[in-house]
Amino acid sequence: MPCTWSSARFSDVDEPNGNGIESRVEVDLRGLSIYTHHGVSEAEQEIGQRLEFDLSFDVPDCDAVLTDRIEDTVDYSEVCDIVALAATERSYRTLERLAQVVGERLLERYGCESVRVRAAKPEPPLPLAIQEVGVEVTQERSEDEDDDNGDEDA
Image (cartoon, rainbow, N blue to C red):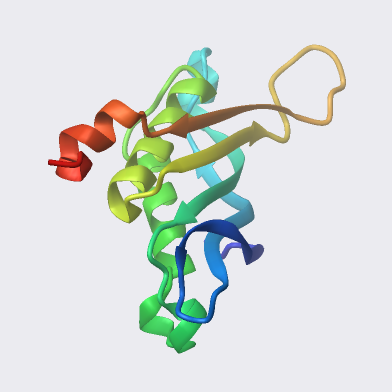
């Protein structure tokens, strides 16, 4: 299940990297195609269909911007594995719930502040011709959650 495209984007944040420039890393993966068994109808859940995923999430404290070391960044293959497991270990009736579960797992694994997951059915079982249907779920950590993790000033 290779990801067809991935990149890292950089923009300003609050943590200087030692040279007066502040960096933030956001990882994008687009076009991850996985055969799944999600949907409202029994046919969708039994026969299954291909879904396509697009993801975007921030990577806090990504040392690779300074070190250029692979071990200091996100393993795109691991991200694909996390999505594939969430998408294949059980069936959901809605893409909304599936996208939420994928986002929760990415938030947990990478400690992101925000994650965006788009899940699409390129060939939806509809009586009219349509290119695709999809949903996008964005999740952001609340300030309360950050405070609960001990980030509050004492």
